[in-house]
Structures are given as C-alpha cells and as structure tokens.
Amino acid sequence: MKIGIEAQRIFRKNKHGMDYVVLQEILQLQQMDHDNEYFVFVKPGPDRCVSDSANVHVVEIDTPSYPLWEQYALPCAAKKAHVDLLHCTSNTAPIFCDIPLVLTLHDIIFLEPRDKQNRSLYQNMGWLYRRLVVPRILSKCRRIITVSHFELNNIVNRLHIPRQRMAMIYNGYNEWFHPVNDDRDIALKYMSQKGFLFFLGNTDPKKNTERTLVAYAKYLQRSEIKRPLLMADLDRNYLDDIISRNHIEHIREKIHMPGYIPNSDLPFIYNSAFAFLYTSLRESFGIPLLEAMACGTPVVTSNTSSMPEIAGDKAILVSPEHADEIANALIRLETDEAFYQQQREWGLQRAQLFSWRKTAEQLLQLYQEVYGERK
Image (tube, rainbow, N blue to C red; front, side):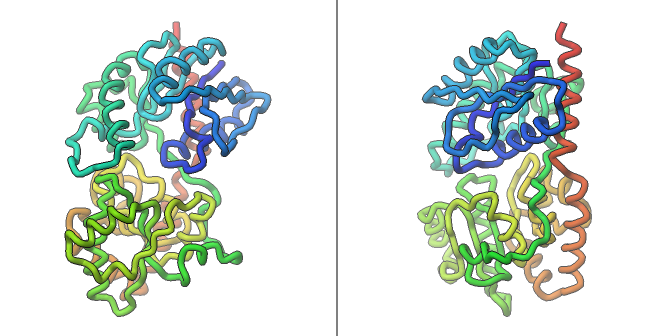
C-alpha cells in the first residue's frame, strides 16, 4: 500500500492534542511497518519531528491558510504521490478528493451548543470551518475513526452514520510518562517547590476553567496546607475576569502561570505535583489524564463524556459543574493517606491498558481493510 497521512501541524513548535496523536501514530508506524509506504503531508515548521526513512516520505506543502492547504494543496499532493488511501487526522478533510478517505473525527463538539462567551478568534474560526466542512465529507469517507466508545455512540446517534463505517481506536501516551526523579530540577523552572496542584486550563469553555478556579478557592478556604496551583497556557486577562466575576481575589497569589509547557517537561511536572485536575465538561478522550496516571499522580476528573471510560471505575470522578465536589476530592486526597496511595496505584495500573503501539497496530489493520475494499 501507499498510504497518505495528513499531519499539517506537527512541525509547529507549540503542539496540541491532535498534533501529538498523529505524530505518535506516524512514529510507531515508521518503526513497525516495513511492508507499506507512507507519505506524510505537513506544513513547514521549526520542529522537524519526523524524518524521511525507507518507508516514510515527508512531503512539505507551503500554503498560507489552513483551508487552502487542506482543500486544494493536500489532494493535489496526495494525487501526485499516487497514494492508495488518504488518512485525514484532525476532524476535517478535502471536500473534492477522488482518493479513498479515512477520517479521524476526534469529536463533534462543533455541532453542540456554542458558548457565546468564547472570545478566541482562532477557536471560533475553527468551529465555523468544521461546521461547514464535516457534513460535506462524511459520506465520502470509507472509514471514520474516533477515540472512545462515548464519542463513537455520540457520532452514530447524532449523525446517523452506519456503525460498519465507524471504528474506535483509543489514543495512547508517550513512554516517557512514568514515575521519575527530577534530578535536573526541571519542575523548579515552573514552581519553587513540589507538592502543588496542576491544571491544564485554557479559554475553551469545555475545559471548565472558571468552575475549577472556584473549586480551588473553596479548597484554599478549607485546607491547612493551601497548595499553590500551576496552570499552563492561560491568558492573564481571562484569569482576571474569572477572579473578579466570582470575587475570589484570595487565589491570585497562589496561582502560577508560566505559559506554554513543552511536552518534554510535563513528566517532571506531573511527578512533582500532588494531584492533577482534569475537570473538563467534555472530552472525547483525554491524553493528559493518562499521562498523569502513568506518572503515579492522583487525578481528579469528571464523571461526564469519555473521562469515566478512560480513567476507570476506581478513579476520582466528580461532577464538573459542582465546585464543592472538586474541592471535596482535593481535601480527601490531602487528609486521607491511604486513599491517596490507592489512587496512585490505580492510575499506574490503569495506564498500562493504553499505548501508542496498540493504537498504531489497530490503525494499520484498518488501512488494510480499507485497501481491500477499494474496488
């Protein structure tokens, strides 16, 4: 087979969820599959994290806008490479393409009610683009992959796609997420001491940043230790609005916001943290949840969408809409040593069920099925 993989954004410096997923899939396929040929279509960038090899060819396409890159340049490049199928990995695909398509549809949040308070131009434009493109490509895809049973059922029920055209393939996590001693004091670049709380919040309403900060305020009022909170990649003005609106000024001095944290530093941060907060309103999978668990860091996560499926039935599951439940979970972790150790052991055990190797093996099997059906 000649397999095309769309990986437009993996060469950019500041990667996010979907970028890491396709990057790890490519690296695993490059290692394990020497029978087939891969063409990886990317946009030029500073982080050349995939190199050419005997079975993998990196094709750089320098087109200024995302829609033009995907809708015109990508199908042209794929056709020129004579690929047998094209895997589009980030929710959208070319509308006009005569190559058999495989689509990874991570979620259909763009079809759900929109929070009017989201002021991010980037997120709003992405939301509009997906609403325009996805309904036009679904019928053209030979397979639609999603990343949890929750999301599979959601897609089937909302979009009425036959189950035989759907596939569920779990994500994995990188092997460097495990219990480790921070001999180089990498975590100290972000926090002055260990034992802090860690939260990967941002301005996307689904991340539930506001309620999580209200919960943190309640925790500080009840805790004898009053652990600081490390938050990554959050806008300072957005934080100020939340603090003013909820009259929780006392949390300001306890919050540390270093900006974007490279993935290579995250294992040391998880290992140095007392607990990790993953209290989203909705997730299709939740890779940070696995990363923290694999490091042996207790996680407080939500009882909604895919999070119970990934975290398992012994995890700390709270209602993300009730700040008191989040605060109560933190207080229990802080005051019940046996419970804390149980959560640590559960996370280490649960994370072993997931790996990028398993993801790539299932992906290769799906490619073979689609290739066999192409006539």
